[in-house]
Length: 399
Image (cartoon, rainbow, N blue to C red; front, side, top):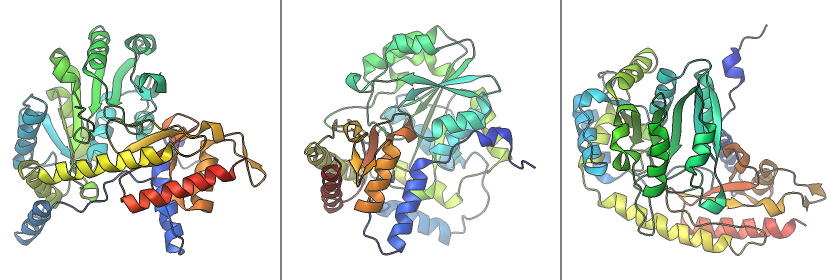
């Protein structure tokens, strides 16, 4: 008997989670492992956020809340979005979720039916196509090119749109490439999307505060406000406020879509953690200087990792404008041999780096692009130096 549903059989496990779990296991076995696979800041939660959690706990705010989040949190989100994006949504059009990931999943479940298609720029975050498949729909790749800075061409988007297209999912800044799409790029995409009124835009903005070199992350509604009636913006506290484990995200969008997302949440998890909701209020309304201090440290680490990677033979590394990942090209190492074994895939290369050299990365194939590795610089400078020295030794050992 096949006990697993057909839909689930088509879904792949998260490669990022798998690599992180393996790195943790090796550490427990006593191995010295530097993890560049995890997608979370290594900074502690900000002091005023910590204090908010303590106060909420002491005051007994540990009960169920409204499934879409307490009004005070949604008001804080509305104020934050008005300040950062320039649009104010009524709190009835805001849903707080257990991380931005749940907001994205809820949107897919609310919007997609069997036979629908969702366009996803490739390289993509590993979970996008799996969420689409879980909703019974088909993910369709919009191929991006490194030579274009991983920015899409409007003509390419036009080519992959069909009468079955229901959703366009993207992130800028991007995971895994760190690319930040320009205003001009977004404007050109918006012109195409205007001609396809059935398509809903799902913008994952979780890294929008982590940008470097004077770059600003522009939201699609800032260049095309006419798309607001079919655009859902997703964000959260995980990345910018170092609150990954607290699991607090949100979505803002049209009333009908948010109502559908609320229905999905009502039937699944119900409200996000009550303590996390109060932590998020403190994060969004409190001092923003810790965020900027963290961003500055990430920018320094970005420079360091790129500089060291560019010294590794056979590796090509472009400096990302946002997030905290470098999507480095290791393709010249594929097809070569390590200890007599031909390295055929980025997955095998990632295994060798972890098992034999003690560096956890994530293979590019997990993001839809063979020949690359994703390396996170959300770790300390000493660990970055140690990891890059090991990557260089691995590259030298391949012949």
